[in-house]
Length: 141
Image (cartoon, rainbow, N blue to C red; front, side, top):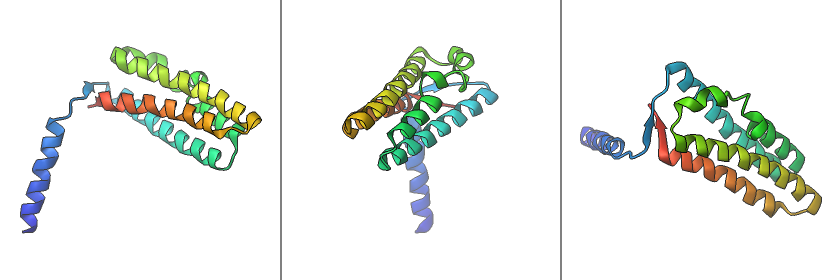
């Protein structure tokens, strides 16, 4: 009985992989690891931003966003040397995410002044929408 369930689960998993319609992005191994590291850092940064917003630390959230996700973070993440290996849509989503993160940083600073966290949250949703769009359309080998 257990083997039957295991085999069924494996077959369903293989079916899901076969139906993955995302564009495969093939990178040299070191660049693949670099990109995966960057994406894990982006995820940790988003977690830190949400934690700071939960503490009403808008300036801290803004600094974190700009320093690790915003336009000023692109050089630190090696965006220029990674870009030629990415499909155009992936590059556009990445650039849009960096721009959205810089806009979020400003929205978070404005939220602190105005006492309006909803604006900052909407701006953060825009950042995450770029992440979601890229992951929905592309995958690494």
